[in-house]
Amino acid sequence: MTLSTLDPATALVVIDLQKAVTALPVAHPIAEVVANAARLAEAFRDRGLPVVLVRATGVAPGRTERSFSRPGGSKPPIDAADLVPELNRQDTDHEVIKQTWGAFVRTGLDEHLEGLGVTQVVVVGVATSFSVESTARQAYELGYHVTLATDAMTDFSADAHENSVVRIFPSLGETGTTDEVLKLVEPLSRPA
Image 1 (cartoon, one colour):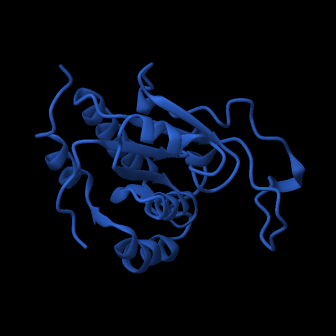
Image 2 (cartoon, rainbow, N blue to C red):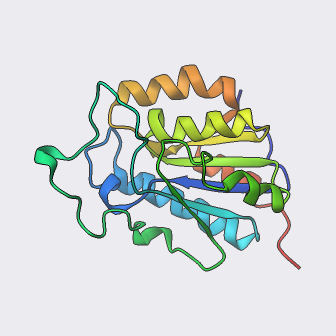
Image 3 (cartoon, rainbow, N blue to C red):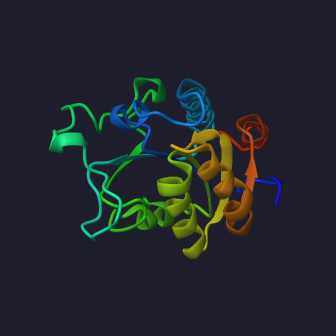
């Protein structure tokens, strides 16, 4: 489904644009992904719409065949979970700390958005097939309208990114570019 509309109560959810994650090799230029996410955050703030900045500080405890630990068991840098400065975090932003791929599990995000009357989320960030997709799936299952700005996200693999964008996201919501989302944000009313 192509991008058609944004509800008046739409929130931006920015996934894992933090120092450790953005330092990893990804399929698309990370500077462009971060710049697009920052443009969206600024536009949402300008309109008085909620901005949610999500950071991962761990992983779910279940066993997997793929390890997400650091080589040699080294500890991540002390600022690994810090948000990238380009996001220009504001006091009005809501911060979510997560231990799982999706941003809704045991974080209070659903309750926070419900309290604000949010009915739609725009999801961006890293990695498309992991945390972005998991968050979009959870949002969809919770009854939110879901929009995904596909040029404000990337993955560790171009194939994985493409699979999510082409095969998964159309079943969860609408996709579009940052510019398309910005055009729909523009007419939303500013706070009184």
